[in-house]
Length: 121
Image (cartoon, rainbow, N blue to C red; front, side, top):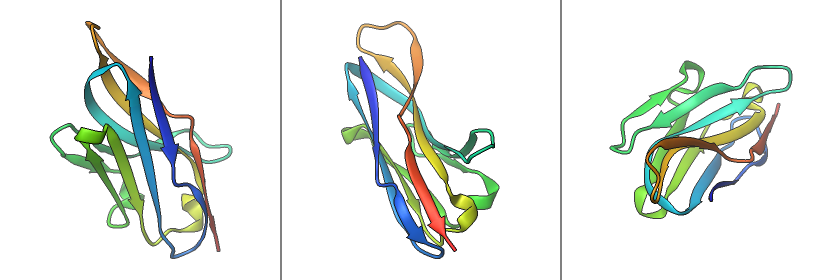
């Protein structure tokens, strides 16, 4: 059994910052790519940022220069530092990880339960 548990969401004023964390636990042999997605009410889920096991990153254009994704491989944790937040960043944020479980022969993508981020104007 593998779980992804997110933390760090909340309510913040426009221009403020939040840091999201997502820790993977369970019988894990290897974690490949990790990512953050978000979904606003009435909209499709969208990729915010991703990071490879080697640390290469990719960002959704609207968050470039404001958000930073990072990971601690020793802790099986991915982070999303969000600065200069805007009301349009309001959404439920989900972490996502591609994982090879112990004794498994295939990689599986797991999702966290989501954490609400609300940015007031």
